[in-house]
Image 1 (cartoon, rainbow, N blue to C red):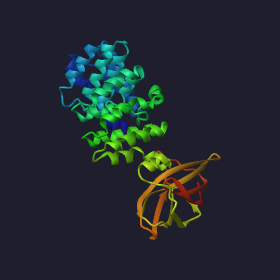
Image 2 (image 1 turned 45 degrees about the vertical axis):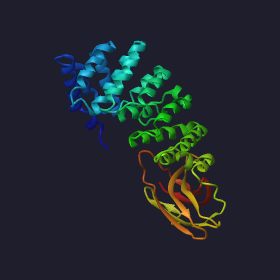
Image 3 (image 1 turned 60 degrees about the vertical axis):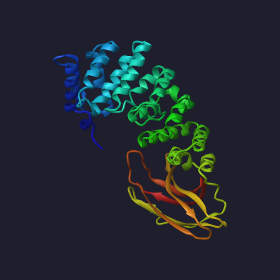
Image 4 (image 1 turned 60 degrees about the horizontal axis):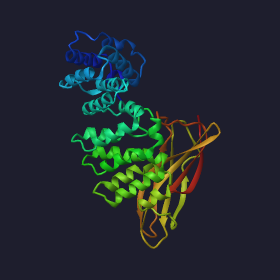
Length: 365
């Protein structure tokens, strides 16, 4: 993973300043160039905000003049990459602070022009916070844009749980408000766009499972060659959670004739950073083949509370009477998104959302 200094370091900001100086006619943008003096110890997002503030202080305060400079800079091929993040943020601030609808619309249009150089999905959050309905109406027009980056901005920028993006309270409170955008894009020609649609609907499933399932069901009624793949990815959180409606939509019925036997974990105690291996057999005792989603759950105990974390294991078609042996090795090495605590833990097998067998072990500090 590149560091903040590699993505938005002194040389990148110097290149940005050069592009803006040539576009604006300034001999030197001292504030933009000097903003890097604050970078030590800052994250990428913090650096972005520092450069954004320097730009909004040093470039014209009115949106039309500001936008003219940015469009001139866009004529340079070097005006691209991570230097664009603070530019899009500066556009958002300049376009929304006046309260002018024309500035708002022009600012959104400028984000659409910039997003092919680096996604404007983070900057659009400022517009969403300022006027959600106006932002979504403009984003809806982008769904027919010839540039896949702009179409993706329509769905990615309006996600409720955009990674790295701040939450927009009104957007979170109205999960149904973006469905019209997703409806226009779920059959998009671009995998890049379709992937964003699936991730967007997965976000919505965390707030309103029924809305996500009903939307996916509509899509499956008028599908193309990619729709089932999109729906599976979009409902992945609900599938892991064992949501019966999501499972039923994808053809996974309750595993009434499926039996789990011989569940074994290879140790009672796992060292910190170590691994646990478990295996088991799954048998279909019915008279017809059945497809099952097999997940496993690690129950982590910390501060007196147990938190279940579901992990995808496999999807299998089981023929009648033929046992399938399944094994898995799980690592307890700490990572940035997951922390483990010492104490009693458990691992459990789940099939089509129904928990089957459970084993207990201890994790040492």
